[in-house]
Amino acid sequence: MDACRTRIAALCGRELIVVVNRGRNKVEKFRGKIRDMYDAVFTVESENGLSCFAYSDVLTKNVKFLDGAVR
Image 1 (cartoon, helix red, strand yellow):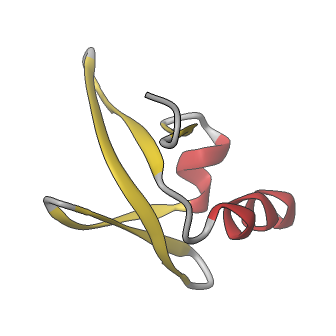
Image 2: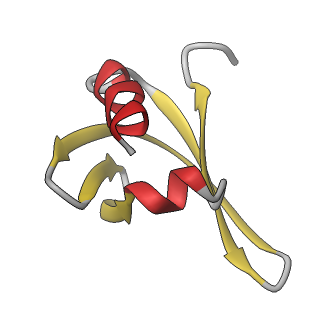
């Protein structure tokens, strides 16, 4: 879990494409930046507002990050 937090901390402030698997073949993609990190969760700010995810979502690959600078 600490390695996951370290990787997410390295992405803070960078433009990212966030890919979220919501289950039942529902995948959501949006541009955003990691805004804050807390003990169990982190927040991502996008044009649609603020989203909150757990570090376990990244470990289970329900949340993935792609480089948002590349178009």
